[in-house]
Length: 368
Ligand code: IPM
Ligand code: MG
Figure 1 (spheres, rainbow, N blue to C red):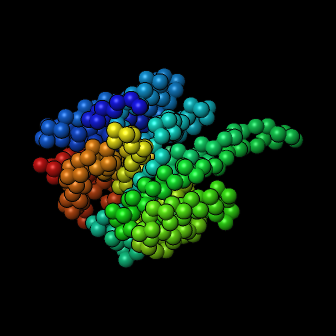
Figure 2 (figure 1 turned 90 degrees about the vertical axis):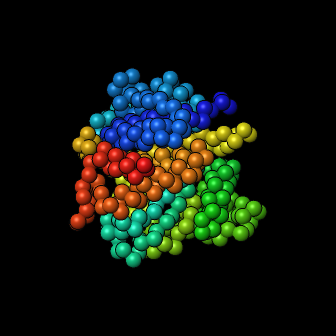
Figure 3 (figure 1 turned 120 degrees about the vertical axis):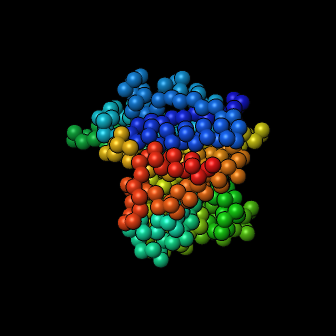
């Protein structure tokens, strides 16, 4: 494996609100450099629709190789209606999927935490969500997102057939399940694994492998299995029953969007996509807010940068071994919320509306 430069951070702001929210992360990185002498080096490149516009491809080889050499990638968001009619292989999302797949970032951590200051921002009743702290572990490099065969082909009678294939190998299930069990041990020690073993063979395999791994190495962790549709329902009925949710790529995509709304806004939730550690303990990782490019509000200065900022806190914790700094940054976000500052997406009565950059500045002022 290429030697990864630990303090090198590759910024890929992308499309829509991606650049705006990444700008605030840049300010925070600079603050850590200026005040804590952490010596982060940053580099910035195009990815997604903006890369397509300039180079005719959502990610150039040059940028891809840079990503391959970076220990930490901070991604903004990719895509938007502007590129909807672009041919499938050149769509902005392909860049993101290529990075996930080729960098082997198989474990996607998506925390859904309900900040006490924001219990009223959710559409659910406060008693259902207050104190909520869920970690979704989504498999990110397998399943129907990448399975072969795939494609659209003409068939008889002038019809066409769209094909995607949902596949998982034992090893792919086991490596992501380990991540979930290890995380659970540091939390409330409970994993709920979700699949559709009642309908899909790959779901049956998922369930068997997770159970076998548990029985072999993680007997101390409380494991149960839940059908993914039931999980979707339970998430809004009684979300606090969950600690770690382990699930595949597609179900994880949907369940994490659902879980995010328990917390009030998609604008608050960070994510980490982690690879395996090599024998030198090095690991590739990409951090991104789970919200998309939100083209409808792009360029207006109203996007919420908190998900991006908290994604950087995850980078400090998971890639840079700077747990202390991660905590300081997370605390700064809490403090700003305590002060009643809100971007538009989480605004409620009596609170003060601030812009994207004002929110970033306020967080920085709390770091001092
Ligand atoms: C996500 C997004 C992506 C996904 C898209 C943009 C390809 O929805 O990260 O959840 O489907 O994985
Ligand atoms: Mg999604």
